[in-house]
Amino acid sequence: MPIEHGDVGCWVVKCNPVTGTDYFAAIAADDQAEEPVPNLYADSWCLSPRSGRSRMVRTGDLIAIWVTGPKNPGVYEVGWVVENRDDPVNTIGLNSIGAPEPRKVHYKGLRLGADNHVPRGLMQATAGLDRCEQLRAPMMSNPSYLTVEEARVLARLVADRVPDEAMTEARWDSLLS
View 1 (cartoon, rainbow, N blue to C red):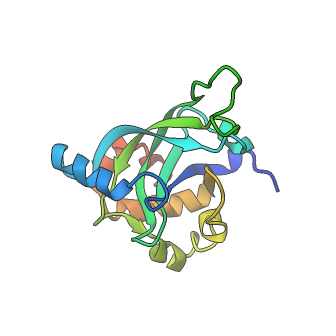
View 2: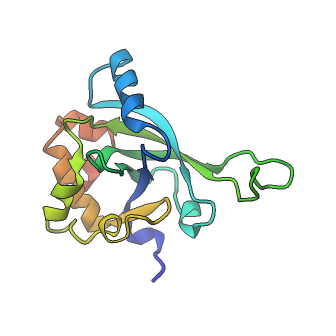
């Protein structure tokens, strides 16, 4: 069944460090140069150009970054969308292998870090998250989503790991009321 924008509590964007960006190496290098986690920073990830959902993502929407793969999968960042746009394309609108160019979602995110991330196992064991789309259909292309109530449950798990001011900086405190 198709979703509508009002169904979305937050968008979930996946990163697989085995097949794509080495997320753990990138945050380790960044953590050495930046303030300690949790810290707020700007970043971007690709969205599937073939998913109608990629065009539903709006400025101000909440977002969670899910790191998948064999090493400690779960939610490593929460934040909000600052821009969602098509990447520049070549003159025929396709990349070098003939596929549509990806969209980029730009966001401000609160990096939770390896010690504060919300692990998949905890989500599977938490009522209200145990049937979320990310756990039911983990191979789905970016973005997937959490319902409003699922996003509230995730926000409570994140709030248990970070100071109140970090939740406010990430704009996820709105889900705690």
